[in-house]
Image (tube, rainbow, N blue to C red; front, side):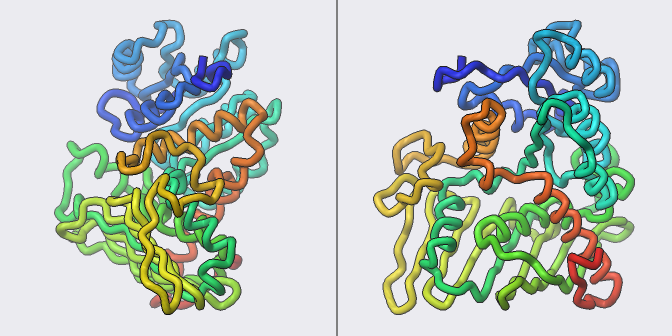
Length: 383
């Protein structure tokens, strides 16, 4: 039983077999709060890897599958079949499994971006899920308590009318050319598996989603400069994007996987006519809040100033003890579990949805088109 006394949700997984980082993260997130039991998996398209991975995870042999099609059909027919599935495959393998499981009446938890193409993302919205099956996109950074607090501060008017949004996500792990032996790099730099965007699809969408989540401002247009600095690389490894938001706010987004010395530097700054906030993912339990003309205030996760209801959700340990990436990921899983059970209505507006996924793909496509047209301003509504 889950810690809150609710029955655990039977979970399956597509992808995420031996050696897959993101599958490991999803499994930790699913079990951290005791809301899910992993009972089935199609963990690899290679039968021998699927079998080995399933055995290593303790799955019953008759629930280790070699294809997601087989898994969706078999599990939907079982009285004890999975109720939800995590899709943790490369981007080009998101649409097929998501469609199969939604049509089988199984809730879907999908890694971002939603699909490899905008066309597939839109096709996914046309599916009529059986038995009201729901969809979650794991933009996990929205699960940090202080990001929830930032959203509350903006909504409350504490920052006033938003003027400037700056978000960045620099890494350095693709600074040099990589070979096929680096599986994580190989599919991310392959247009056939990653989609239209490289760096922009991998981490740029996280930065974009974070800015949208906190400010709730709708993007009108982008002016983008996408670059592949590494010779021979087919997809971008560095992006500079200017953004125009409804209401007049302006934004800047930088994402890079060739910024030497940067490990995982996601950070967000939002400025209004009354105040501003600054937050970094590598120190996520602290956020600076400044009211114009007053001293800076350091807000801490679970601290005395951190009181908005949304910020206090899923704060697991007392202030001063660090919570980070895995806990934020687990918050997304835990709150989706509440939605699945029918008692999480207050979380629905906080959880990344299929609509967020489609907009993320519009952002990628508009940025790619803008860059191809000498950074011409491109409306998201035109793609």
